[in-house]
Length: 622
Image (cartoon, rainbow, N blue to C red):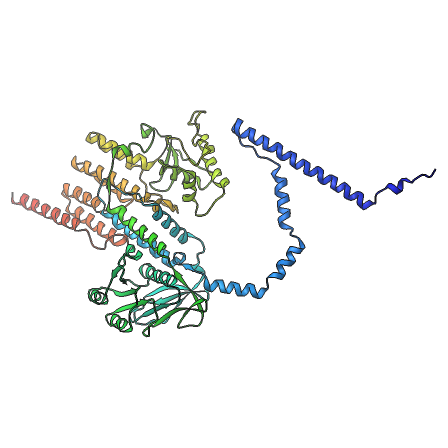
């Protein structure tokens, strides 16, 4: 009988090592799967039964395996990628994209700054003209989004235009009007639209030509180096640029006639084709011309050739700014809403103002969000509340000013200019719950911000803003006796410290008209209180109330009129003149106000002065 040695059945050492590794790998995989199933069950139990958070641990294994897969590509893949694209092709492709890319004019910081400055001036003029007890209309959603995007562009650390040096084409006259045209060779290119300038835009794509023309119109309106009259020559009077204040004419004769009454240099943008003779007539009448076709009279020609745009004065390619008709319409809607909110005040309705907060007596608040000045959070006794997160105060300010529609998505859009992770917003909400819970002002069954599984973001009714308190004081004062009404208004006006949201860089208050509405609320309360004090002869109360109102709008003519009447009531003619001079200095220093004094105050000054002189003359004659 022959015996077989045990060595003949023994496996090689490498095969044994492979089997051991395979067994270990199988055990690890089995451990991960079991742990994942266990964590899933724990998560469901904690989430739906105990309503508590549960942090699983098995995700660490999954993340580690995923990162290992991403960071270690196969050699064959790396070889294929390196051989498929050559450095020369990459360089040529990047250059081609640089020349062919479409640049929206809204990314140009020069134009954006000009648009926002014009919006601020319009708002300031409308606020000064509004009467007491008026209420601003809420702007439309497209207008809010357009202004938010413009402010985000202006407030960004590095904008596209800040990275480029400025380059100016040769001037065509002694008084050039430079406007941004586009990007050329790492420079922001400016073109002259002053007297004797004729700019032609030619190409084989009419849509792109119109977009470039729209961009030049907006540049001339909001980013030109000097003020000019902008006109549009087109047979179609219904143009998207009409909403932004561009006057449209349908004949050359009408253009020439309008040039005789123009106070500034006029620039005409021609959507329809004009002949060389008509271009000469416009130039002889003092116009600068921008047309959408080649002309022998052009001083600057922008043409599309070889898949890129070029300027006649240089051989380099240029990426001109462009604006689609939809973008021009959005900008026009924003400017229309800015004017509409001031020109169409609606009456205050008691049933609406009484529902600004849910508590019966607004003075029973527990948390006061102060927005009439620097944003602060205080308890009812005046104790300041400090939070760990910088966005917490802003979220509370946003919630109290959006009490009728507090949603998570709207809050995240307003507070952040970019998309943020869910955990970031959750941490801010948790900071409110955690910090306010330490005050021990609520019962254990109540929460400052209840937990929900929807987009709704409710908060406790005892969290109110000082703007709500002041608005409620105005409503209550209308139904109280004289002395009680003045005391009620004074209690609300004491909350005014400075301009609403002073010292902050929040984007949403101005874009949604909240700042303007708070200003009007303060002016209404100050005017009501001053008028009541004036009627009962309390001059000190008039000066105090109007001073509170002038903190938020320093050139309001009605407040100065009340101060002048208070001085006249004391027989102080010098005080009347002093208040009028103060008003004059205020409007001269405020770029949003008119440079000339209000005819109403001039008439009041003459009336009070004449009355004082007549009274003194009558007393002397006696």
